[in-house]
Length: 341
Image (cartoon, rainbow, N blue to C red; front, side, top):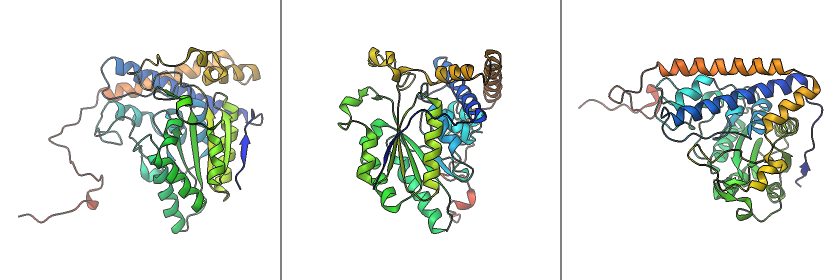
């Protein structure tokens, strides 16, 4: 039988964990802002998708996982990626099309990762990654590799797809150690939640799948850290899939091409519209865990890291289609070899 738990602010988060999470969030926010500036300057082609307002819940996923786990982040999971170990250079090289990036300048800027290290490149933000994580978890089970947790994220719009339902049902039946984070940011692109689902909360769906569900305020870093860690621990200890639904408001458009003019102004003024970064910073100051001078120094340090990385990538040569090895697989020994005519 499934249990739906309502998360309350978690007060037992250590100072070290809270400050570490905040610094990852700050780095992710500043990196997003730099990518948006480069996009507007015509230095990045394709789409740029920001995680503004979702950093707290994203970083909580990356920090709750450990080496050997599997993480399939989506387009707004910059904070989670960084906390899980993605280098800044990987993000910038992929966005700017450098052939030295993990996707070798071949793919869109959100489809980056290192599968062998457990960081999966995104196929789609419509539920496709759940079955990929399921497959990896089942493969490891067959090999006798216990103790691995797989996590992925999804917007509330993606829960309306067949891919979501089929993969969640499979995970439930197989009792896989899957942590499924659904970020209910109130809009699937421009479609409000009132036109997406009729249930009071998406966490209610946990009951239908027979799995454990958790709901939380995605604007509060302490609640995010506590709830995600509890869900990962549950999955790791054999309690099966965990569905987490975090409510918040996306504080930007779907992408930098979108002005978000459709967002209801009342939502912006509601508690859902609070900026998780500002709330976390206020909490740090109130708890006297750091002062404004320290926070300013963290910001300066993050900006310096980002600017140095961008400078490196801007000096790298662009991909050369005539010299590129167009094999689909990165390892030549895995490619098919045909005898010469």
